[in-house]
Length: 328
Image (cartoon, rainbow, N blue to C red; front, side, top):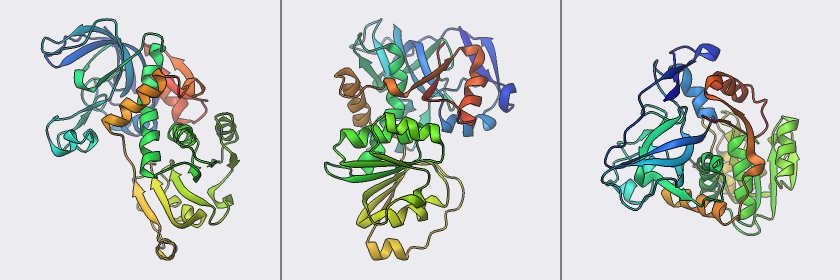
C-alpha cells in the first residue's frame, strides 16, 4: 500500500510517500480502506517530534475490507468511524468508556500506524458503523465532533444557556454546533480572524467578536476556551455569571497565570476537557446517521497522500476554511 511516513524532519521535508506491506488484521482488528483522515492542531504539534517512518493520522474512517478471526458482527463493505485510542479494555476508565484515561492508552497515528495511508488496521471495538447513505468521508469528522461534544458536556450546556466560545478553529466550530444542538439560547464566538468569524456566523453563532475582551461582562453561563493560550483562562472569567462554568478545551503547554479572586467571588467552576468517551462517539455517529447534525459546513480542502506536507502547512497557517483532510 501507499503511505505517507514521517522523515524525522519538520515542514515540507517532514513526509515522504512510500510503499508498505498491506496490513493484516489481528484477531481483534479490522482493516479499513481509508476514505479520509483529518489533520488537526495536535498533529501539527506532534509532527516535529515524530520518529522517521511513522504513519500519522488519528481522525480516520473508511470501509471495512478485512476482519480479524476473533471479531464478530462485522461485514466487509461497512463504513466505519474509528475512535483512535488503543486501550486495555478492562481498567476502571475503559469500563466507564473514558478510554483516553486508560493507563495503557496509545493513540493511532501517534505510534500505532494511522490514517495517512491507503489501509489501516484498527481495533474492532473502537469502530463505529455508519449507514451506507452517509458519505464515507464524513467518518473522519466523527472524532473532531466528539471533541466538541465532550467540551459541551463538560460545560453542562443546556436549554436556555448563554454560551461564549473562544476560538473558531476546528474545536471551536464543533463546540458551536453542539452548544446549539443542546439548546443554548445564545452562542457567541470570539476569534480575531474575520474568515473564522464568518464561518461561525454561517454555522449559527448568535454573534461574533474579535476578542474575548469584547464579551459582555457577566453575561454567560458557560465559556469554552478552544485555543490553548495561557492568558485566556484569566481573560474568560469576567464574561461569566456567578457560578458560571469555564471549560478549557484548548491544549496549552505553557504556564498559565491567573488571579483567582474573580473565580472565587463568582464561585466559578474551572474544568479541563480532553478527548471524549465511547458514548460521545456513539452520539456523534447517531447524530450524523439520523441527520440531526449535518457536518457538511465543516468540510474543508482535501489533499492526496503525496501532499500531506501541504495539508499540514494549510492547518499550520490557519488559512483553510473547514476541516483539512487527506484522502488516500
